Length: 371
Image 1: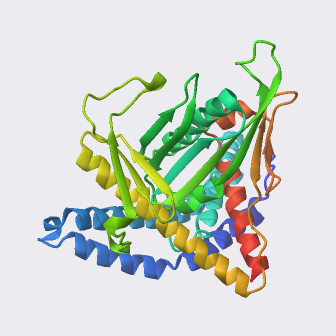
Image 2: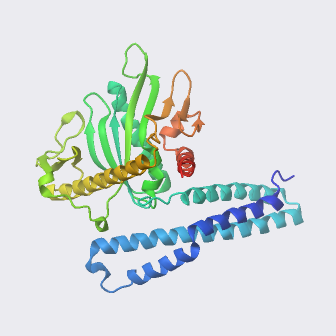
Image 3: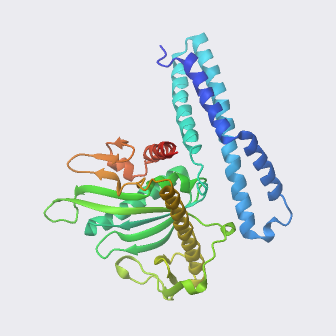
């Protein structure tokens, strides 16, 4: 016997997909793909390498988005045929396969539906994430490293390229701070809900008395700047220091002063970069991240001004947004959305999609209530 009423659920799947198509504006997406294909076929495209990479990346992302919508429509049609065959032949195996495919389609529709909520100015950009150890000593530094692995594993699970750009190691274990980039469509819009203070509660592996320790780490997510954004920074506002790249324990991993520390004097924002091979490359990479941070600061100032003029000065994000508890019980809970899971190990292994989806939906509801 079927546990799913397909006569109701298949029309519901089609209705959900239709809503997604309307929000996505498939006709506009098709027109954009056609224009990008025209741009990509220009004979002089690669005369400007940066522009060529932007065009081809945008085309790839748009085609992938259109393909996902088209494939889902076909999968729903195939599901209907599968259900009809199972009913005609009383085939329990085919019916079980149909139920499994129904669940997979619902999951894919949910992912697309969440994507339609990402309509911010910079949501389509790549994300630059910085994790900083907070209160909690060596446990906090270890927690920062655990969060780094969590996000890199999440990216790996989705096939998103990631790149660690700068690392500052703590003396005993873990990280003081780390900055990395995730390259994917809507990476910033997706990961921006991860920004805030994260808290870990566990029996400290660094305490010889086995006491429970609470530690904190801050996660900052900014959109990666693009050359078309034109964020100009006067040279007299930048202080640039060069030094040798270092590894765990402060050991030198480079014999030349190739690493770069860039300070924006008016704001005090500091960016370090040591991933690239040369000082020139590290300087260019540091400038892009600095421009990205200043772009975000500018946007935050504009948002704050708008809220002040509207008479709404309350912050939309709390100081602590998620708790990872490993003792005396096992639970990860987002304090904004109330979403929780009872397996911290799987969360730290990168299974955070449900938390991200809940965060995106929560943010959309918050924005709607403020309108």
